[in-house]
Length: 488
Image (cartoon, rainbow, N blue to C red; front, side):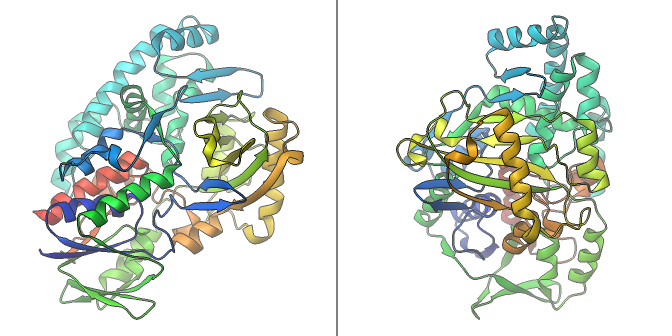
């Protein structure tokens, strides 16, 4: 293989393209939007910098390895700064829990909730370390291309009872309900329901404890910009604002991609970082595309997101960089989102406050925020978001006013929102899903979209819809797995 085309300049597409270009494969990235980043898009409004996400950076070593492939240092292009506490967790009953990897502080916080739970937490930590070793270190960058690969992983999955949910595992170790939520909510960051997501995803806890939680100075968009600079220094080409409309297939080989502008690019291999349903729908010249679209449409998808971006007058030293505002319901709210397709009037929120770490992301004396609420995807709830978006933004602001900033409405300088409809329009996301396939056991590893198509042998996939799944470490890991197949 001498040339490759990568569709999509999200984290997965950029990480794959960097690996290919570092190995001497002339690589072109074709991106539909006017800026690189995919879900990590950026807007600048009234002096505020608004990251689309993802905004929680873990395992910075997986990123540094991309620069290390060509003997370079990530610090040349990106400044990562630690965030502590990792999150401030807040409940309607007034309970506040600062989540950190400082054992002394963490022990005090846990024992305030329940003195008996510190010992249980130690047992959970050992469990998390085990699934981290088996699920992330051993399998996180390995492509599952056949049932044999899955069978090889089966003993480890059985040992750690991977058929159980993260919440059920956590509940076996700790008694306090606040702590059960604190140790299980992480699956929501990759699109998983803590009540059904495979317990293997408890590895996220160990990932954070060992690697910390980080933020790119200037925002996640600066990490994307740094990856683009690295890719272009290596000789790669980036084509923006030109959506791919067809992947030409002939004799079970991907021959070229065609773009809306009329540009056509031929390559020895094609890889897509786009939504997997959308990507298979681009195939022309093979029944494989329609067949896979039908198969994928029968699968379960992660929820959508409603994200309210807002810039405020004033600064807020008492609000941490990352906050989780749990709602009055946990199991019930998750059931509404994942099962019943109900739009909650009592949402739980992830509140991102980047100016807590980098004040330059807002004008002097001002602050930048976003509040994110998981919502049912458009296959579960037939919401007309173009009409309902403003109303739901008010629901979010009610929660912010009640729990965090009483005069939030009076302080707003600028605001806008992003909905599942926007995920569908801008990113081709099936059903407006924010994380692609839901991470349940029967949609993990070999059961996810394969990193290389089974029939079109030079067509590859990278990103949240492939193994190992969503989140920055997940999609960067998928790039390593896919690159391994392509370079082999």
